[in-house]
Length: 134
Image 1: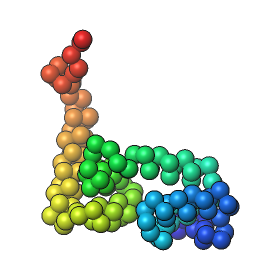
Image 2 (image 1 turned 120 degrees about the horizontal axis):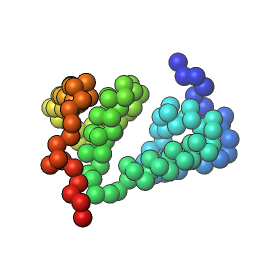
Image 3 (image 1 turned 90 degrees about the vertical axis):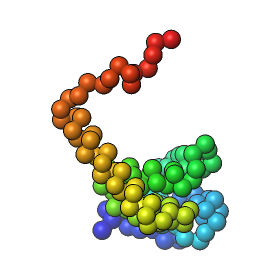
């Protein structure tokens, strides 16, 4: 259960409602998920978060599906069920297949395993991996 109520449009302050309207327009959908509706309690936080998401997840040099897959991987590493589910849904909408999702989870699991080994064993970073002085 959310620590703050999930706000309906008519329960929001005008500043939050304006951001929610922008989410709808940008995503070309009437659906606005619970994450946005909960953080709408704080219009400044809502606006800042939405502007950052629009910038980072918007057009860039990385393919939109790859961006969603990265978001899923980080969400798995951070154990955020909400983000895992919402970004998996977004990735599926961009073409993610079941075999790709399974492979992504295998990569996340492998990275977690080797990360823990490298951290636990305090393996020094190879010189070949460090930036070369200019």
